Length: 177
Image 1 (tube, rainbow, N blue to C red):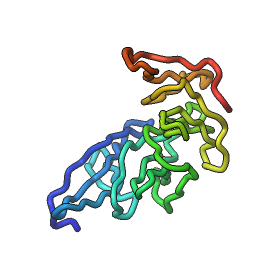
Image 2 (tube, rainbow, N blue to C red):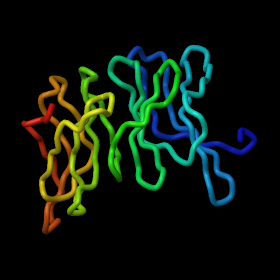
Image 3 (cartoon, rainbow, N blue to C red):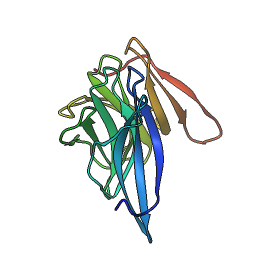
Image 4 (cartoon, rainbow, N blue to C red):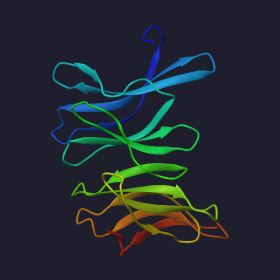
C-alpha cells in the first residue's frame, strides 16, 4: 500500500502538543484506503494507530489524550475509537449515519450528529464506551458540528429548521448525561 502517493487530512493534536494525528489516504484507481497515523513533533516519528480500511474521517483526540474517536465509513457510518498509544480499535454502537464526533471535556461522553427516523439530523450523546445512548437533542431540522462547553453542561451546534431560510447557532442548555 505504501508505494502509492498518500494524502493527509483530519488533523487532531494530543493535549500535550507533542503529537499530531491525522488520516492518511491512498488512492488506487477508483477506490481508496485510509488509516490513522500519529507523528511526534520533535523528531517526525510516525506510528500507525489503525490498520488500512475503506475510509476514516473526522478524528478527534480526547481531552485526556488517551483516545481518538473517528467516523468509519462502511455503508452505514459508525463511530470507532482507538487508544492514542496504540492498541485494538473499539467500534462504538451507533445506528446508521454518524459524523462530527466530539469528546466532552471530562471524557465521559461523546456528542455526534446522526440522522433520525424522520430524515433530519440530530445531536446524539453517548457514553464514551459506546454502551449507552444517553440522549438526543432534536430541533426538527438539520444540525451539524456539535461542540461541548468547557463545563460539559451545554452543547453548541449549527442548525436549520424548515423552511430552511436561516442557518444559525444553537445552544442546548439541557445536555443529556
